[in-house]
Image 1 (cartoon, rainbow, N blue to C red):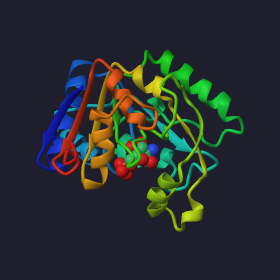
Image 2: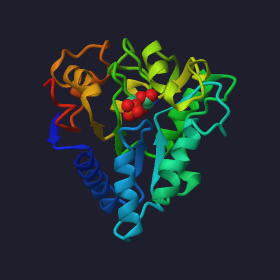
Image 3: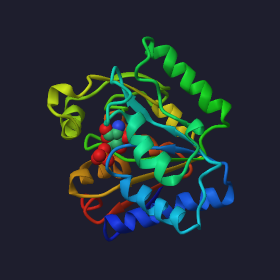
Image 4: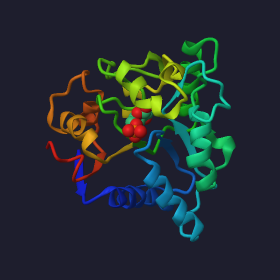
Length: 241
Ligand code: GLP
């Protein structure tokens, strides 16, 4: 695992954008794995800036999101379908037909998970997966004790994750209880992993991911198994290393 420690969130965004840009310049039709949450927003903004100035073009690229809330109205502004459209598809100029988000509205989430796995395979797999990390060490919505071999499936959100995400909803009760998420095994199949984190609140999870044992209580420790994983963090997120 390559660990890159930079001064602040702005530098995290630029460094991560450089790495994604390198993939797209090498292969304009690359399939990217994209994450929601606040962590990658700076990276998306930095990439959008490069699209506006004409140095990057995502029009031939594809994208697969990590996860979605279960049972949420897909038009809800905080559904990950909407979040990905607003923060990734439109600002980067991706073709919406090539952007996929797991179907959290499906009646049969097991079948929806299997279908998502088939779609990723049919697209040739993910070239680079961008990740954030939850304060409890989750990646995607793989909460602590998720299996390292898991595939896209239904999960129950940890109380801490629901509390952390309550800020996006009108009330804590409105945060869905379940979700559908790529598994740790799905994520590990991407040819390159790039995790970004900033701020003191992530320092403990970051330390467990990098220096802790390989253990399902810290799902992000799965990155230790990957041969091409880069972690880009600011000084605050690195403060417990
Ligand atoms: C969310 C997402 C994750 C994200 C994490 C951290 O709930 N499902 O993909 O990485 O939690 O979120 P944030 O970046 O807002 O701290």
